[in-house]
Length: 116
Image 1 (cartoon, rainbow, N blue to C red):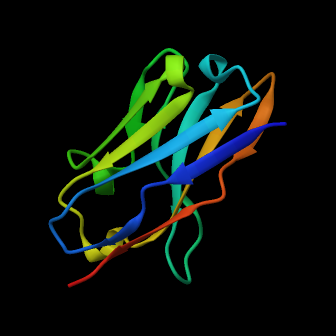
Image 2 (image 1 turned 120 degrees about the vertical axis):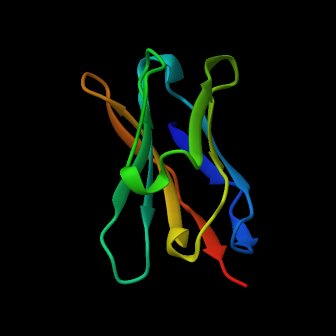
Image 3 (image 1 turned 90 degrees about the horizontal axis):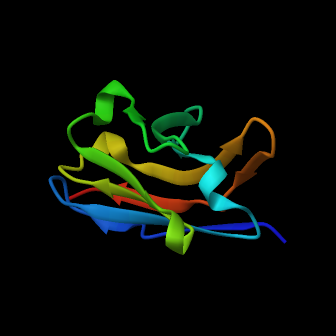
């Protein structure tokens, strides 16, 4: 059974940091690209960071220089380190494991709230 478990969200003040985790089971984690998405209230889900199965990273412009995506294939886990958080970073964050050949799987999401 395939499972992606998102964790690490919470309430943080502007300028603070959080580290999200995406723990996978039931898949060959190393062949998947991992993408972190977020969905703000009343808005569409957007991709914020991607790490390919080869380790290449990319980010949406609004988080460049503040967020860092990484992966640990030995532990089947991906991370999103979020620094200098802003109120507009508030939303539900989801990880996705994406493979052209093997399909796509989603985590359940974790809430991030940036507020003073």
